[in-house]
Image (cartoon, rainbow, N blue to C red):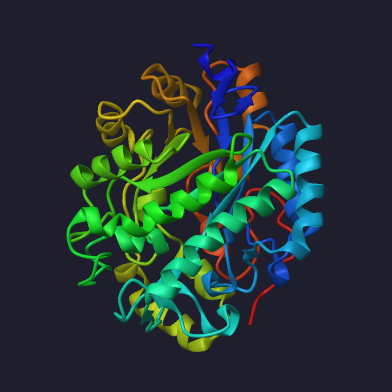
Length: 395
């Protein structure tokens, strides 16, 4: 029952307890740079007791951007990120940053050009028509992941989380639904993993012995024709072989099955109200519930699949998915996961971990309405139960 408040180790990093603020997009980086609001939120979560907090989705290069309020990891923003990590460390927590590339979800207006992806297939959910990456694109982007790790070190981060799930670029290479290549990067799984392995080679070389490397991976893509559990286990084995310090076991595709990630219903009316483009509002009103299919929420909804992966690998695994009560957290940790990660519970109550220490059996006051998720595509993250900051609508 006290496992949550034991220390734990991931690679070279020791955490004061076994809780991690998951990499959930904050929408607090106007101009692709950290804002005072981003620093304040992560400091609040650190003061609230988490072992490590994760700054969400930093694009490793401009071509990996899809929103004007996403973080782009580059030298000129390092001082702002250093201020954030200093604040998190002063509060007693560790700091991690998620690094990734959005591939076929990139928007030309912010990405500096046409989106790139494993295959030149239209992404209805963008809507984006990317071009297929050539060999020079593949090598450049893989190298950008390595440079991102070096910048993360300069900014004072203790860990990086490579985003290889949720339908982002690495996940697009892994998934047979989005990878239709006929070269060495497509076809059988061993080929579809090639780009991921090249990224990991760059990341591990840059990380050295002082930065922990976590990788977020899908156990299932959440729709027919995507990655299923058997392939996910092979991906996990390969990442273990390639030196990952821990895996964060997740699932879902933000462009095909977003609610498979979070569970519950997406409040499309909130999304529509915040959009400034009338065509997007109209499309969401007409087809929102079809395009964004709901999945029911239950405690520990990824646990069964996560245990299947756990039987096949020996490296530390982070559990994520419905760990929003002391009972659910204790259940996950009892199976030997190194830590539990959560996001919505800490958006609703940044002091959730400290409150768990004060009250056994407590559940998060988050009701999983997903208002916070509906906001982030157009403005900043907020819980409608708390006093949200003024919405800064984006063009």
